[in-house]
Amino acid sequence: DVQMTQSPSYLAASPGESVSISCKASKSISNNLAWYQEKPGKANKLLIHSGSTLQSGTPSRFSGSGSGTDFTLTIRSLESEDFAVYYCQQYNEYPPTFGAGTKLELK
Amino acid sequence: EVQLQESGPGLVKPSQSLSLTCSVTGYSITSNYWGWIRKFPGNKMEWMGYISYSGSTSYNPSLKSRISITRDTSKNQFFLQLNSVTTEDTATYYCARFLGIVGYWGQGVMVTVSS
Image 1: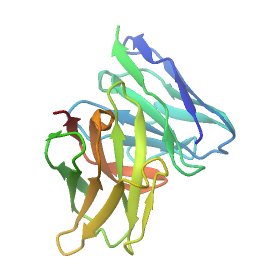
Image 2 (image 1 turned 45 degrees about the vertical axis):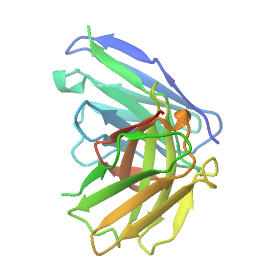
Image 3 (image 1 turned 120 degrees about the horizontal axis):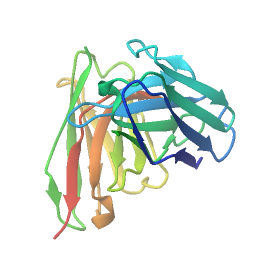
Image 4 (image 1 turned 135 degrees about the vertical axis):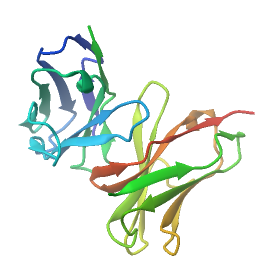
């Protein structure tokens, strides 16, 4: 299986700041990477697919970049609703695999 | 709007079978792909398998001998059965609309395997 290494596992930031989360694949996955947001009591939300394509409804302060093995999720000008857990997931190879998550907390 | 809701027992004894239901509203399960994902304590997530619009299935090889996904199109529901569970199957189980990318998730149901 393709191993997805996500870092950091924990991130503390303040509203208005920008943060980046890294996701590295154990082999090339082209741009077949998605990012999800997890919040308590809510269904997980698809934010970005194809490495950098924003899902409909995803605010423009979110962006994704990368291809091959290295990917980044960036959130500019953090808002209070952005404090959550974020996961990456590759869908280039079967079975799909996920990163271990990054918890973004309020500093 | 597509909504998915998991249901089933929260506690299962070791060696028994885990059975969950996913009820879908806002979209027919005779279109697209529908699957199960689980998240273990510590946040590791595992894709378990899916059932397609036609009823064909695909499973994670790590589970292939223990897992079965079926459906009832008349109720717009699909089901997970995981046999011979151990404590290592303790997790939050999510149903999802899935085609590589997970477009829609249920909120998840926590299942504990314990005697």
